[in-house]
Length: 315
Image 1 (cartoon, rainbow, N blue to C red):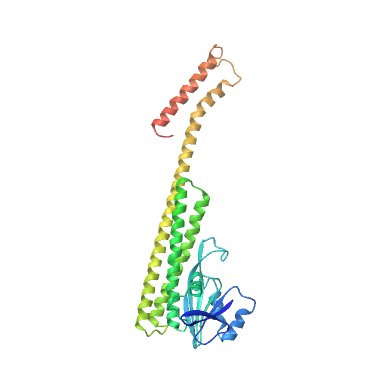
Image 2 (image 1 turned 60 degrees about the vertical axis):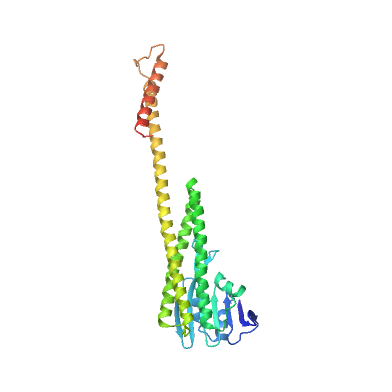
């Protein structure tokens, strides 16, 4: 799906055909050969498009003559996108800068691009290429922060469930959140390195001091989001270890009680086995109250052993 946008009369309008200075958004899924047609039409290296569609592509930038490529990782909800069981993963957004257009490429819909398509800010103008790229960087950090809040809420909810019951389902949910945080930590760090390198080399060719300050603020916000995701990951790791210890300890307590009960019940069983032997001259064999005597002795020994176990806190 290819759409063209341009700022006109204070609003973002969709165009029928691309114009100089417009924004071209290239969204998946794609028909066979569509990416090649798009590449030929706009005279862009096909690798710039395919790299932007590769879910495992890392954050980076490169230049080919007068065309620039920036690959930025953004978070999305994992709805069959990846085989991973993580609730949230990251996908690449390709930003291609040509002398005539600014192009965004993504294999899947995401909150960053949808925000500018559906509710663009008043100062958002695709013809201002540097401002356009910085706006995407800024919104991308905000989306990461929003997803981190959702992750933290889900983590807290599953932890509360585990306090009352140790279901495998709740532990699996926590594990899936942990996988999501690994995606976030890794790619927030990758995005941070990308922006710092772009700042150092002035890859965006920014001459406006305000935009330089803006890029500095974006790098700081990205660093803060990285620290938060790292903190959540450490908290979750500690929580998983704690619950694993609690479950192991509970199992040990149950096994200890079952062992104690088995030992206590072993005495009456042993005495009953002796008196069930087909031999003569057993004690009290011919006594009129033999059953009562043997039964009472068994009960007294069991009660005595139970008292010893309770006193030593073996139960």
